[in-house]
Amino acid sequence: MEHKPEKYTEFITTPLPELSGKDEITITIPDVHLDNIKKVSEKVPFIVEKMPKEIIKGETYHGTVFIDSNTPKMNILEEEAIKLQNVPEQEKVKHLINIVHDNLLFSYPWVLEELKSKDKELAEWINTNTSIRAIGVIPLSELIEKGYGICRHFSVFFLWLAKRAGLEGVILYGEVKNIRREDTKKPLFKLTDLGNTLPHTWVELKMTNGEWLPVDPTTKLIGDSEKKLQIFKDAHYLGILKSSIESKTTGEQGKLSLELDIPLFNPGDSYALGRAGVKLIRRLTLDNNKKKNINPLNIVTPTPYHGNVSIVLSQDKYFNDGKIKFHLFNEN
Image 1 (cartoon, one colour):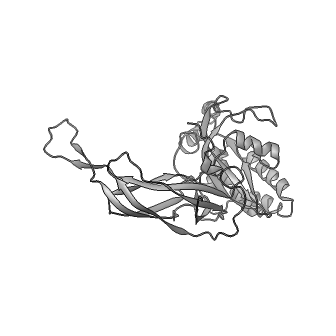
Image 2 (image 1 turned 180 degrees about the vertical axis):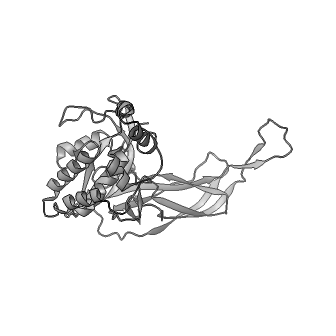
Image 3 (image 1 turned 90 degrees about the vertical axis):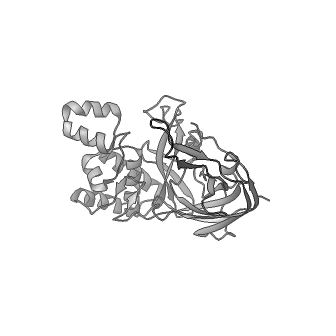
């Protein structure tokens, strides 16, 4: 499925200094009328502001890499990054990407097949831990030691190094489109044909001038010029801060569920616009009187709801890919 820029992803490109971001906001939807499970209430807009997240030991990032205690190899890489602290920022980013690629190879399926005959143990580890279909969390030290990963591993590794070099940022996720790069004239990705989309993870860094710099550690693409920033836009790098928002809906307990238009960040944008509404919950009950081999679940049609609704939005306390602040938004 291809993500295309929607109106709510393009509403603002400049900072909003007059707004004070909050860790939690309450959205009120008055006079809600819901009489069937397909109907959704009015959706009220809100603004999400992304903020850098420090990479620290003992935490897991993007649900995939755990930052553990340094090994000798990690110490060497950390020292390389620290030496970059006084290098100009954009040059620093290029050096960091080179460090990542010197120590991490992409776990392409064909690479895995070749390894099976050369190093069966390593191939099995990759297949279990860092292949395209692998799930679960691995320590950063093990990732660096084995030397193979996919986009989410590249992004966490890069951000860990960036912190040591004096930079901070966020990890973004979305469906991106494979296009031919204007700078190299080659396809952006090797895993799919031109024109197709694929799930992807990348990074944005907060620079000292306050601007956000899109960086894709996997493809080595850096949005440090208008031409390269346009590649991010053409490939539909619309970023989601994965699993960042949690909510509480008040109205009638157990009757309403949240309907959320997830905020999508355009490349380099500080703010994104989301919308929140509610709908009736369809409930299932167990019918013990039904005969065996017949589905014993009954779908219970919910009773209509009429009244005011409040939705409380806050950052998921288990979310580590970045910080977010909320702002109320008046479309008028």
